[in-house]
Image (cartoon, rainbow, N blue to C red; front, side):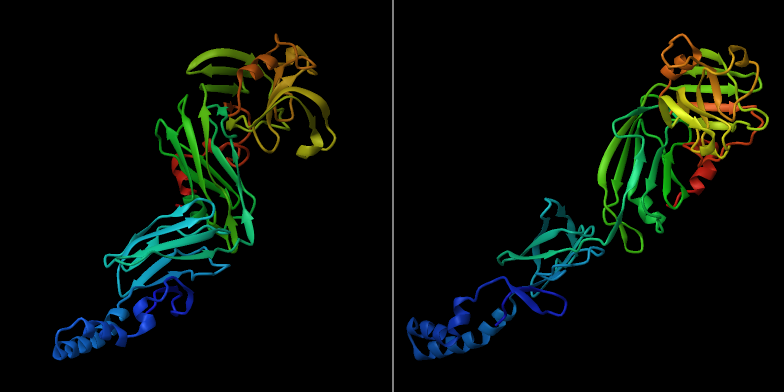
Length: 414
């Protein structure tokens, strides 16, 4: 008999969804007998029996048959294709697909209402229940479980969720696995700003993707990073796992310009000069990078050792005060208590850092190093000019502002 069921494309019945009806159990003859007992003439009885004999198989053949892909009962289904529900000998009134994580898969019917397709793929490692309702027939259910990915990757992002940064802070994402399909990964990440501004991603290499607008963020901007990386295949057999939204905020605008010809740093906030400090930059043998740099780390005190930046044993200072990182390679703007006060504003004597007069112990609030540190935050911009050195590599720290907008956009994969 034509029993409704859900099957895979080969029509293999894996789970019965309806019980046999009374007519299927008794056959056609008893129905004819019932109709004869109610009839007033033999001729009418014979005609009704003939009519029943021809119409009953036809009605049974038109019971809707529903099929689901992945098939009912599948335990390690793939998660790289949409879910499909089809019906023959009928149409679909509705389809609902629910995961054991509480998520649902939205979908749409074709014009004939015989095929439903989910708008996205199912998630990995999830059990799904499919409830399909054919027109004029009872609801039918099936279930399947998707397999878990073998290898995964995540993206570590800067700045931290909920933090407030200076106007130069990009959104920088470093992936734990090299990304081969950059377009797929970038499409799964969006960065939006309030007030609205165009934000574009730029790949520095196969593990780092940064986002920024054409010019510095406006003070007070709210930034939202949306990660939709779950089950995105970054490279062959390696899938993302993150599915979250995080927000950051931009604080006041502070841009400091270091002129190493004049050996002075000018601090401007919202376009107004709020401080000037005498400084000492890199000497002739160890010039300071020029260009636009962004404060990426801050330390009240830290150890600086020359061997870590390829300068052998030239120095090892355990308590450098008020150090703020400008490059990954080791450029800082920091306090300096070991040089004579007369050095600042007059000589460039460092190994590449920008130094301000400071006091040992990092507790003297009257010195320049303390004051500049106290006025700064992560994401503040420090521009170095007249240093005698070329412009810093945009990938050396959070320094993508050294690329023109055209060059920045050329590094996008979408």
